[in-house]
Image 1 (cartoon, rainbow, N blue to C red):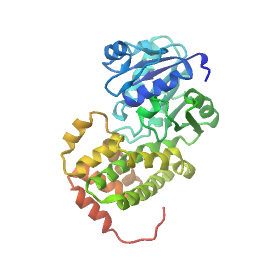
Image 2 (cartoon, rainbow, N blue to C red; image 1 turned 180 degrees about the vertical axis):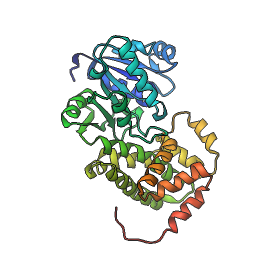
Image 3 (tube, rainbow, N blue to C red; image 1 turned 45 degrees about the horizontal axis):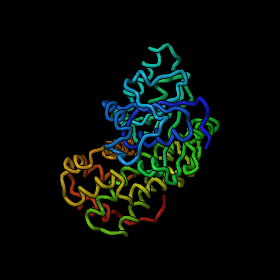
Image 4 (cartoon, helix red, strand yellow; image 1 turned 90 degrees about the vertical axis):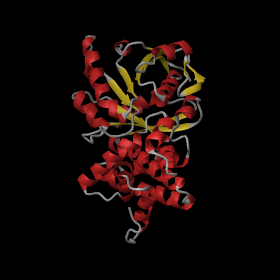
Amino acid sequence: MTKNPGASISVIGAGSWGTALAILLTRNLTTVKLWGRNSYKELSQNRRNRRYLPDIPFPQNLEISKDFDELIDPSLNILVVVPSHAFRKTVESLRESIIDQGLDPEKATIIWGTKGFDPGSGALLSEVVSEIFPVNRAYGVISGPSFATETAAGLPTGLTLACRTRQNAETLAHWFRTPTTRVYFSNDLVGVQIGGAVKNVMAIATGISDGLGYGANARAALITRGLAEMIRLGRAMGGQIETFNGLTGVGDLILTCTDNQSRNRRFGLGIGTGRPAAKVIEEIGQEIEGIQTTKEVFNKAKEMNIEMPITEQVYQVLYHDLSPDAAVRHLLRREPRAEKG
């Protein structure tokens, strides 16, 4: 694919997904800058991310930025891929840096690959961006069933980019589209974010079930009813049913719940076998978004009076020391009902 001449983007966050997306973008943009906290020396010397993607060398047009301010250039094309708990602070710092360099923050184009809610406030990340960049409307989220290693290696992948307007989404999707990466576009900013968040909660749930040895039947039931919970919350918050039946809904849910490349699933497996959560987290060694997201989704469902029994039981396991086995038994004892959304 011919690169867009002169096109550049700056990627904030050099974890596995941020690095993978940066590598993906080099296939379609002339210059990609990557910044990660305390990672400049390692990334620039090795020209690969040895911690997360050790087998994938950096393309020549991937530049490693030493300082946060060094990322900012007049194009103001930004991709944020940091953990949800760091998202607000990162976007605030981004605005400050843009202003400090005499540029107009309202001309920035901001995309994020972070999945989750703003901790504490429970806000969608789009609401955080809108609050910090109140006039700017050129922002969106990229999501979908994708593992970093496969995306960076150029294996076939399907993603969705959502913005407030279809026109913006269609334009920005071209940044990520390559011969092996099919990127759809959507104006359902809410639905795409809900799908990307809730699927991590369900991955923990299915991991727990598999760790307990409950088998494929139970896993299929949890995925199916987990999708119903996702749709219930998503539609109540303004998401579109088509989104949850697509890549960022059922697609991402299936991937994350069934493959052990998923950190959230591996975490669930660990605690399902009776191992201490802290030990499992230490061994995984990367951010497990579903832990914090479980709390935020549980609180959101309670606030909106939405029934999410799987989410509730995962919350009780993670935050109130309910045993995984007791949580599953509680789900099985629920009153029989007609199957519906």
